[in-house]
Image (tube, rainbow over all chains, first blue to last red; front, side):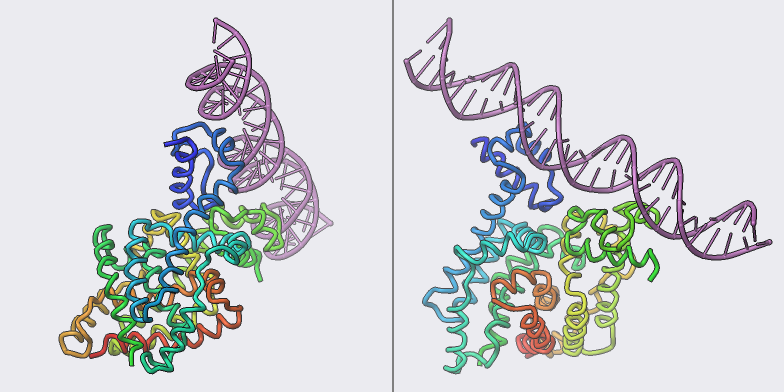
Length: 197
Length: 197
DNA sequence: ACCTTTATTAACCAAAAGGTTAAACCAAAC
DNA sequence: GTTTGGTTTAACCTTTTGGTTAATAAAGGT
């Protein structure tokens, strides 16, 4: 593993645990097992190192959303596939949601700048499709955006608020993971149940 | 307004916007319109000022959950009342959820300490009630904890991820607020729809 | 009026944290 | 073997930041 990779991985770990403001360059260097000066040799400064990490995180989260949302399947199929695939991915990267949400809140201007370009999650097509299936009579008359919000809430929230959820529901790490595994199929069933005519 | 109140309010604003690590004592002093030394005169240090703010925030969020969950009503009624009341409250305090979740992640040991005592959200009674209503045949056979997670996800997530939601769904502040108003009734209907026999 | 206590501030301090530099190291090229 | 280029480091510098102090102003009691 190259030094740059070592730094990047260390930075990912520390930033995801402490956030941008809470992360210390020294801690990242220690985590990577190299001298602090190397951080500035490979990445100009804290901001740029952070942006690299954040960009990577976001670019892992975003594109698969579009792939699924803009496919040729029915709304019900999309919901089923999305919830399943997305939870599978986040189980492997359980700190990503909270990390992205937190930094979005603390750094809106920076985040918004690249949320307007690139492969940002774009729900316009899916929204149109939902409206169509409502008129066809497949789906109850609901607001498409509310439905999207439901889907995201049910899949992302348990990870974003992981610690609180574990605390309130009294779940061990394995119990939590087990619950998320089950959620892969439960959520889609519930949502479809509540909107199908 | 007393100086202590001015400081507390300023601290609330800054901490909720920047988080503990990102908040600056000077910024809090400026926000309060007083000298920085007064912060240390009224509250011992940053940690203690933060704990006061966090405690207040958490103690506003937690108790009403118990009040509703442990009342004498049916599960459906509880869901209806909780989603409505809770969203109403959070609309007035839109930064609270993200704030609590963020600091819980960055400071688990401190938070967990008082999550184990006091008026922490305790869902045991409600879980038992759900199991009973499943056996009575009112509710489909589902896992009570998953249902609780659904309820929390649908109500809290939109606020916790507010900025992202606004960005992806292209919502102005007023549109977002409008959507949340509608959500007060939508969520309960959807959830009940998906679990009633 | 005078003293005592409580508030409030400007100036200061020490530690932490981000960032720089100049020298050492180490491979490959000649 | 020496030069040359990119790596890597220890030591250093500067700014930021949480926190203190000593002096001042205001309030209250006698």
